[in-house]
Image 1 (spheres, rainbow, N blue to C red):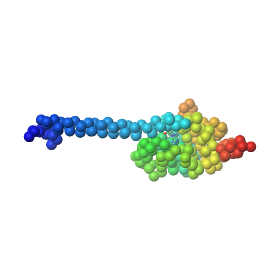
Image 2: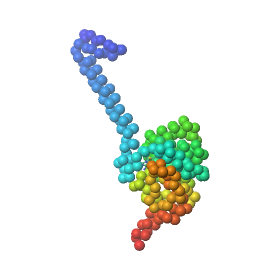
Image 3: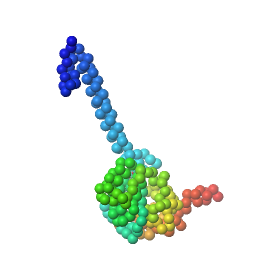
Image 4: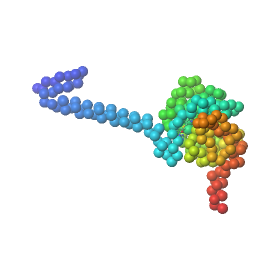
Length: 221
Ligand SMILES: C[S@@+](CC[C@H](N)C(=O)[O-])C[C@H]1O[C@@H](n2cnc3c(N)ncnc32)[C@H](O)[C@@H]1O
């Protein structure tokens, strides 16, 4: 009969080596599980941050500076109602706007940033006047928002001009952070350098922008 030593009830030594082999394979399984689990967790956290770089238009998470946020709020000082931040990142613009009395929403592709934004809105006491959606900005309509904020990249601004011009009501105001729209004429600029924001009036730009269908009709003539 073989003699076994146990540690916390787990056999750890055997004269014939069978238990030792079993323990080694159990340890191997645990190590594989821990390493595999950690890699999956690391992938799940980092992939949404890396994914924007792999899209046709790369719009990475670069949070607005404090001055930029205050420029946005000052550009919309006289306004009320619903506001949307397109690509809302960690929710800082949405939360700051909600504190100014807006019913503010964010649309963001990265689920981690959306969950974090919801947590931050709850912690800062504006959970009821904010909403955050995990959505692709090109797949939702912004028709219900009279106040729109976008911190985009130059490569996407022309396409966004057409989308917003066809969706927004004439009463809408659009604020672009850091990069202006290519053809719209701003009614106001606030701040300077990287913190500059450009303010656009839908009454003006709806007349300036030809919709995508108008453009394709034109090119068929
Ligand atoms: C430059 S950051 C701006 C973040 C925030 N608006 C701010 O000013 O602090 C752009 C954000 O858009 C998000 N984004 C990129 N592509 C997107 C898409 N197709 N739909 C929605 N959000 C997108 C990125 O994950 C990123 O958080």
